Length: 179
Image (cartoon, rainbow, N blue to C red; front, top):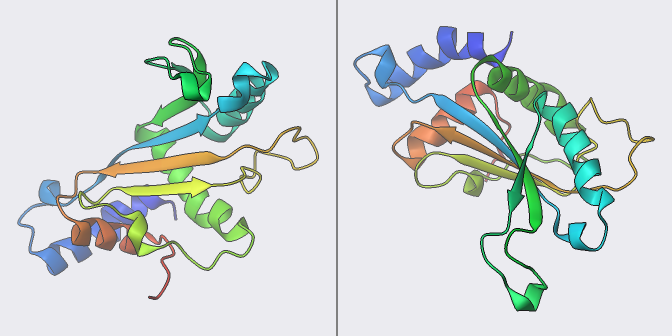
């Protein structure tokens, strides 16, 4: 069962019982998933952006947008307008497909994975994950990877508190550590 069906059939009922929401639309839901890749080494290696763009588009199924530096910082040898990263925002069915793949396939494939930290959920109920390498996604074949780069995943919800966000992710099946 994918996460969208699980949310509609199980999570809404459980959240209404746990937090006392009066109707289904008041229950917190996931709004969007944002994938970010920082490519600070792009100023030295122009191919780094292309490599990151191809892997990000494979993982997300969408073409990434290039993020440019907003201001110059001489300590980092950074000029305004330089390419510093790539980002993709997923909504709707693509978002649910990505989350199903993340929880069911990718997270269990992470080396030495013992669960997500509950500190990954912020005070507004959003979840932020960082990965040092992107080879745990099934679309990325380890033998094809030239350069391994990190990946940041931000999952934005309509939850209004840390507890509601944590309960939402827990009921959806996100594997949290027992702390």
